[in-house]
Length: 157
Image (cartoon, rainbow, N blue to C red; front, side):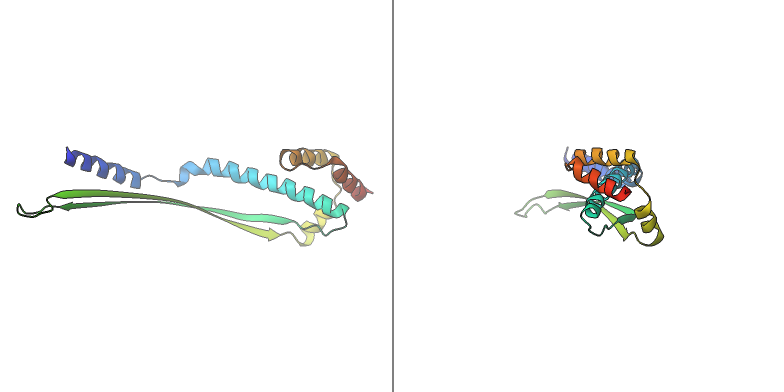
């Protein structure tokens, strides 16, 4: 009975150590990172509209790369002590297992400058985009409509 449990535990840890983490996470991570970047762009744009309204310098920071790093480490330790018939402690065995999962994304940010920044600042804001930004702000942090509209109208003049 004891050796059957030992064999089952060893088999389970051996199979767990052969499991790959990467391919299963691609679909989930792509959607999560994409949503997070889109939400942060909306918040950043609204913040900069308010900054322009109050004659503050707008700053745009772009996500240039995301590197998602995963690791799954497993380990098994098996110990067995077989004593002689005259030994006090007797026979015993031990099984220890360990599993460590690590998720370490590396996200690189780059401030927008140069021609891309100037083109974004000079191009007029389409009214439908203003309503999209207001709608996005209501889902996250509430934003009164009047400061956003007045800063956009001041920019259009």
